[in-house]
Amino acid sequence: MGSAKQQSAISHIQALLQEWDKGNKVVRKKILEDFITQNQYKTGPELEQEFAQAASLFLTRLTAWLRLTYMIGTCLNEQLRAIAIFLSASSGHKFMAEFLEVGGVLTLLEVIGLKQAKEQDKLEALKNIQYIANAGRKYKELICESYGIRAVAECLAKSKSEETQDACRNLLLMLAKGNPKFEVQVYKGLIALLPCSSPKAQQMAAQSLRVVQPVVRTTNPSIVEPLLNLLRTLHLEVQFEAIELIKELMEYDVKDSLLSGLVALLRPAKEDTIVKHEVLEDPEVQPMNAPLPVYVQQAAAAKTIGILCRDSNELAEKLIQLRVTHNLLYAMGNMDYADSQRQASISLEYLCRTFPIVDDHVKDAMGDNLYELFMSNPETLYMNMNHVQADILVSNKVNIPKLMERVD
Image (cartoon, rainbow, N blue to C red; front, side, top):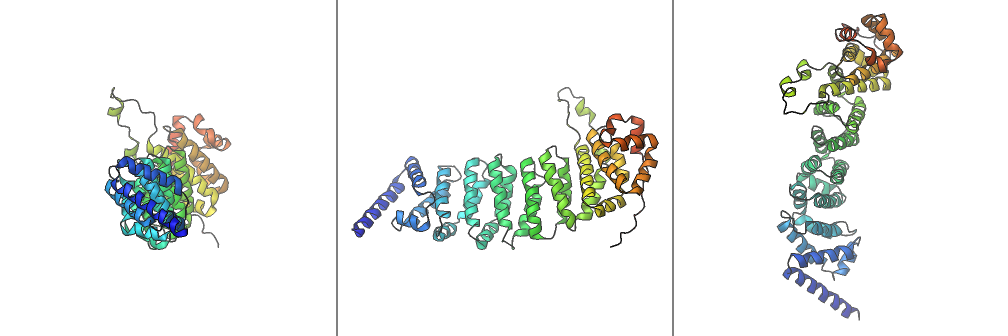
């Protein structure tokens, strides 16, 4: 009886494979849809039983058709979902090995890099790569050796779908963990994403760097410039992640470069603050209401400095030695951007209340009237300040000598 049942199953599979071999696109699509519906979440042994121990023959046909058609997108979504059933099957390492032997990883990576591919297809390809990465360290290394880090990072930067971007981010984090041979490469790939044009990708890259940094332990100096440039963003969620990453990097050897950079941002270069009047006067050009990026960056730097000072007196003293008081006063006098004035005032007020030496120098620089106005309500000082007072702040000569070294 068992033999008859087995023979029947073999005959059914032979008929299915023949139908696939002779079938056109419509026929194959129907076979794929039926396979996906009937075999979700099956284990490797269950798939073998379903195909009378010939599941590999169907997988071989699937991968061959995928390689032939992925560039034109024929039933691409169905093919990727069907392959995912094999790759995600528990106790199905045999299927994964067969898929990898025929260059499956490279094909999936090419799919996520195709301009013409739909976002949903890229998402399915990423899910398949995740199944492979989940199989262990040697599989992660295979993905990385196939230039997978670059391909996934580029997909994250260029994708218009948040779901696809999220899958890219999760895959990069997977490739960074338990993969010592390539963890630094993932770290550098995330740094390379910071200057990209997608705010969502910037946010995810900064978020991911906070996770990956403790894994790689040492920092790369190349992180400083793109991270500080993130402070130019008008997207508050990106600014938040940038500030959180700066806070965490205070424990690493780029601390001094970041602190010096933040202080320098309070005083933008003159050439960066010049508005091109010929563009503004062109009647064909819409008036620009957006603030200059360097002013947004100036305000964000002042805000970050305040956060760092509140977190640590040691950092506050270091910033004072870097002439942060002089530069905060300068930013407070920026009548072209109120948020710079506000953030600089809030940060400087904290320093004045914490360090008497700062308070003395600030009072001397401001004069009694402006100082009283400042200390009574730093958040609204910019609303009550006139141009003469702003000029006093901009032209301040405060240069606090090095504070006494702390006794450990």
